[in-house]
Image (tube, rainbow, N blue to C red; front, side, top):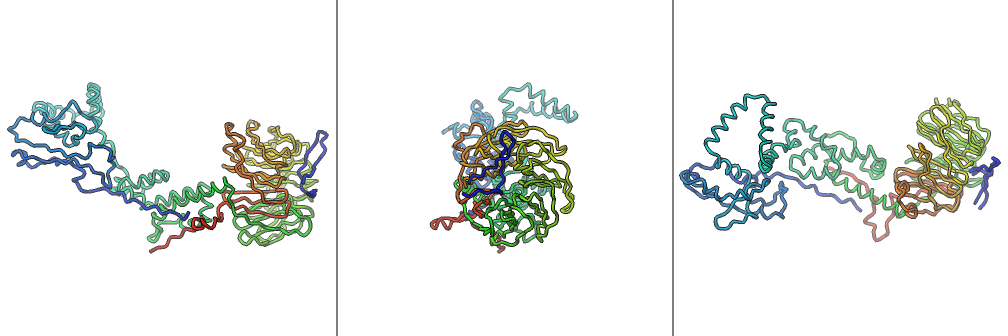
Length: 621
């Protein structure tokens, strides 16, 4: 492979000489269960409190059916044999001794949760017959003496004259004097009083919005369960558009969801009001599992290396090679060895604009919504209008090639083959002022990165240096690489670096400790990027490797499991790459830009009907 004098990955030997050697499934619509409450009182109540007096006096047998077959609103398990029995209770005349009823109640076999077991004269089975709470209350009332009732009424009158705190203290005093099984009976009495359905009660008081806001804190699984509680809960979920709000919250906080909303088309239905003709919540209820399915497919494609590949051939006039790039949904901006900056349309992959002005290879670039800033082997930094392509400003400071630059929030940092780092204040595109020059590296500074706390630089002298962003003071040096460092990225506390020793290292910037060494590339690691899930690296061996970041940060993970996939399509050195949740965009010495798409993956002919290439549109009927 031909040598490339402009590919400036420089190293310093012990004599501080610059070496710089060159080595060449359709969405499944889930049916929403209409949770309901059966209003038939025969399913809810075993007996009426007010039995006809004539029946009480004449000894008429009353059939009390405990038939708790599950209904739409029932939560009772079918596995309990005690819940499918019918019990007959004879209500005797007042002249009969009430002990005849009490004889049928075996208080020795009392279930504190279900009530006392009712015995039958001919076929008593305590495992299959239980008293309902209402029947238990009736039996308790029948067992109370008239003397007790009179004394209770007298105590109640005294109780009513006390303050609330005195009443509470008195009840606590009584409870402490009771036995444990009595505590259980009181607990059964208090449970239904303490369990209040505030979600159903709030709409009745005109506070539907409060109930909706409470349920918005639920995740998808819990929200699905809430729909099935009862009709009122289901109505709150539907009327409050809670599935839509859940999806909107995910889109606002997760870049993967945001990207899917734009690419799959369903984002057009989000972040709108609730007019009469708005999309019903059932659409979003069925959309949610489809989104989850798409996310799982994307993750599977990353791990298995399934992708759709698009190629841009830059067709450089003179020397070939694409040194740097950046992209968004509309365009790709690339810096070439032939001294030009070329812009490409993302949809057509056609060249839309060429910026000329540099007299050397374009080695680095970055753009935002206003400007493109480039660094070149001609030692200059140039500022271009991103829309018109006009040259706006030229910065001359470095005395050798500008190898890398980075700008954000009014601050720009550049580094050079001249071993220095320059910190700039960006007032506007035309007013960029030098703030400070950082020196300390003993060889070319190949890459810089920064945030509000630290500036991080890496050099051919095998070191990574950390500087304070605000004061520009030196903080510490990270040592470990055996040869010059070609690339790095810094975010939060993590620094990931690639070197000409063919390894990738993960560092804790606060402690300066090396957390992990990744091995697998056969030549110099030229470019590296990472997000919350993965690291993607490109090297002079022409390969792009995808690594599991979370596994790499876990010291228990075997080294053999860290590399998820190796992508081989470039025929030359990989110079630069960037990626997001859906794709990798890379450039190479072979004069090409490759787009590796992990979302729109073509399926085999036999699986064409399962293609994830679908859009979501609600059609009002």
